[in-house]
Length: 130
Image 1 (spheres, rainbow, N blue to C red):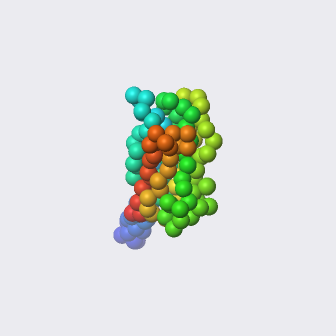
Image 2: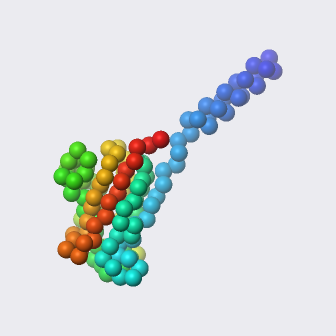
Image 3: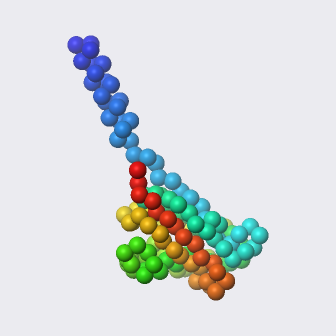
């Protein structure tokens, strides 16, 4: 009986360990570099599905982050609209977040509308979950 209880406990612990989901991460992207360049920092960010990206207004506002439907995986314009933040942020430190859940792995290029001509572009690369 004691051996049976030990086996049950062992299997329970193993089940909990192997089925516990990995915690999602939150990553920060600065809008405008610390030196005042019109760029996202980092310009390219690799994440996993379920992770969150927080864009923070850092320098030279206003900023936003807009994804283009024809450039995201599968040309999904509805998804591009859903993950875009078209509202301009003016105050330093203001932020917005996007959680990349229920997305296809792949490359998600985006830009700042007011500073696109200055080359303010970025890319989120969503990797397949382990």
